Length: 92
Image (tube, rainbow, N blue to C red):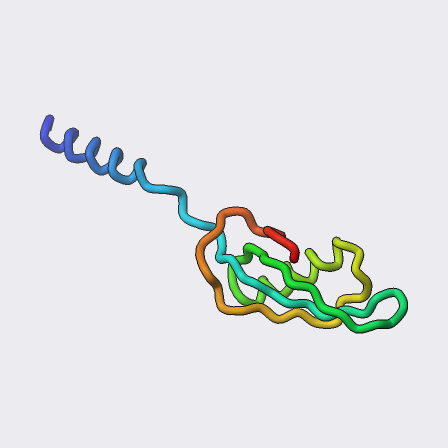
């Protein structure tokens, strides 16, 4: 019995030592928008999202939140690594 308890403790310790799984992946995105004087422009942003489709929505939300104007469209590159906090990471 002692041996089984030791094995269970070892598994618990090994599992407990792992980092928490990431919640998403980092995406660099570009959003085009119209300024309040109807000039076309674009903005880069980095977002943490669960997948590519959600990255586009997060990017739109981030750029809109900066008050740049009317966001027309966003596109995101392939993920470049894990992240743990869904949302805006960096605006450029």
